[in-house]
Length: 160
Image (tube, rainbow, N blue to C red; front, side, top):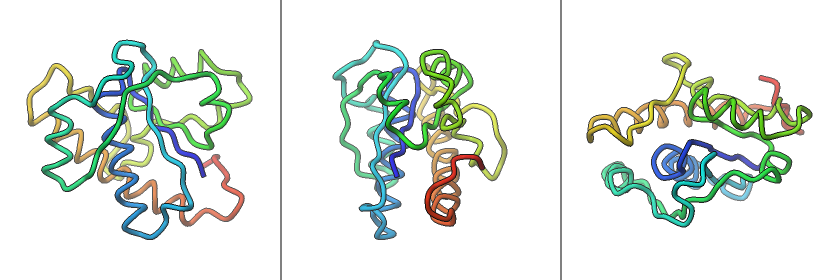
């Protein structure tokens, strides 16, 4: 299964989500079952490393992270099985830039958050505590996402 995490600039939320997801599936022995990536809807940071605060947060939580920011391509929406937007604005951007036949694959990340739905807040203009909050949201959402995905019968049905 191919899973794509999407935020605005691909330097804070989506690369952290990608890294957490990869670490979790690796620890569960499921790495071979998934292809995972992240990108941004904007072209602001193409080729950049993740934000240093995101990197510190990942290290603090023992999450390995290596990523270069990239922008969402139309082919991503066509080829990925599940596309997880970090907020409503990115969700809308993905839908508006893709063919309607692929819209069923696009979900909000917090649709998997057991503590509630809504947006994963963008910590870019915030403090370390905001990056910690994003980690907590992504951590519990990804744990629930993996549980949901691994309980799905083959082939994957993106209609949850």
